[in-house]
Image (cartoon, rainbow, N blue to C red):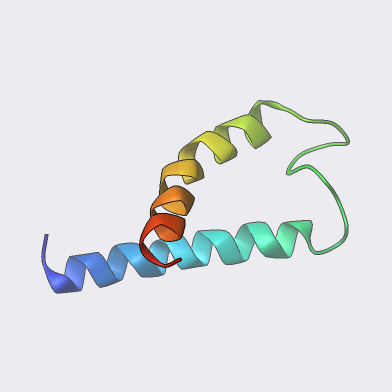
Length: 59
């Protein structure tokens, strides 16, 4: 991993979170539909390591 590839990866993650934030900005609780779905579970599972690392190292 290079500093450039790390910065690119971080930018991709930030863009993804911006998209999800914009999607939920209208007040909805779930990414798709009106109830918890596989999409919500999958997103939560995939971002958990990112968020836990962020909390661990940036607390």
